[in-house]
Structures are given as C-alpha cells and as structure tokens.
Image (cartoon, rainbow, N blue to C red):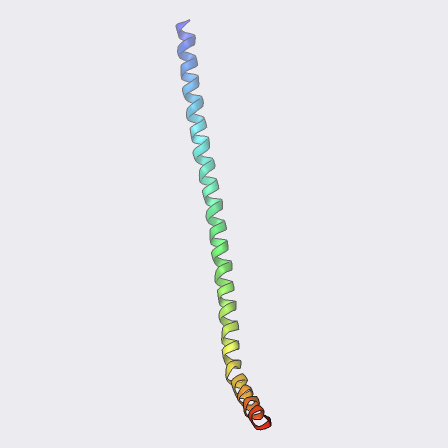
Length: 81
C-alpha cells in the first residue's frame, strides 16, 4: 500500500511539473505575440507620423501664397469699404 502511495505522490509531482513547464512555454508564446503586435503598432505609428510630417510640409509650402492672397483681399476690402 505504501508503494502505491509513493507512486501516486511521484505521479502528482511529475504532473504538476509538466503543467508548470506547459504554462511557462505558453506564457512565452503569448509574450512573443504581444511583442510582435507592439512592433507592428510602432511601425504603423511611424508611418503615420511620416505622413503627417509630409502633410505639414505641404501645408507650410502653401502658407506663404495663401498669406499673399489674404493680404490682397484685405487691401481690396479696405479700398471697397
């Protein structure tokens, strides 16, 4: 009877060890997936930032001609009124 008791204890220990290893491996896989998602999000943010920089540059290029047109209309308004 004692032999069965010790065999069950050893089987239980092995079961819990294997479960522990399984959870460690699984958590490592989840961690890798999260890191991939984070890197993908960073890449998307960088692309969006570059697009916004390009849009800002284009708007800054248009700013000077628009100021000239606004100045022209201000002068025209002052002459009319």
